[in-house]
Image 1 (cartoon, one colour):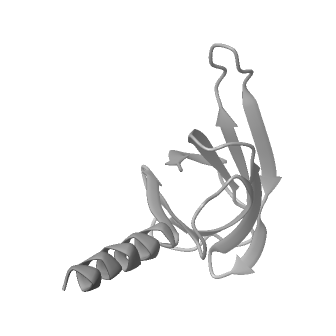
Image 2: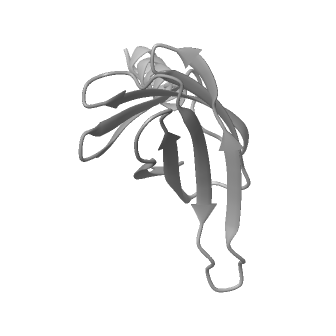
Length: 126
């Protein structure tokens, strides 16, 4: 019985660590669902952004993402910017190279073919 309990705890720990990434971000009428097939880690990460502006997918929008970590004592500020690829239906794929674990600020810039440029702010932590 004791071995079975230990085995179940190990299995549960492995499953929690292998969970994919999911997060929602919002600013006024703009909503962005951020997801990844794999957990976030140091190095290259692919994120899928599902964008809705006033409940609809933006058409022909240019999307870019800035990931940054402010300077801290003994460590300079870090920043990475990337343009997202349009997958259609309001979905965009962006590849971010995150230098280290910790809390990173994300700014998602959405420039629709018509109208104002939008920015949605959020943070990721791993």
